[in-house]
Amino acid sequence: MPMHLEIVTAERVIFSDEVDQVNAPTRDGRVGILPRHEPLLTILQPGELGIIKDGVRTPYAISGGFMEVLSSRVTILADTVERADEIDEARAEKSRRVAEERKQGAQTERDMALAEAKLRKELVRLQVARMKSARRQ
Image (cartoon, rainbow, N blue to C red):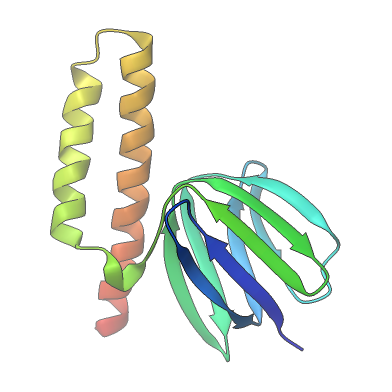
């Protein structure tokens, strides 16, 4: 008995389909959601969002947002989200280096916090992109 998952950003609907399981990075740690899960509303942290459908796991990089779980429906309102095969690993690596440089050159606490947030996002993107590369081998 699958559940309906919808992943939405401010720009578009990223995913809308029946799935068997959702694994998400929350503020309190990773959580696994199966059909008929107890209702839940939680804050998502940057990390790898895993979706399992018909035994196939698809990783996504999510930068944060919110997740609402009802018995047969999960809705994710994401800041940004990318499927592993959409991430250009070389570009993500370049963005990671730029974020590290900005962090090193930060003059204020605000600049430091922004640079750290960008660096976390790029590290997640790299991690998820490398999952795609590992699958091919």
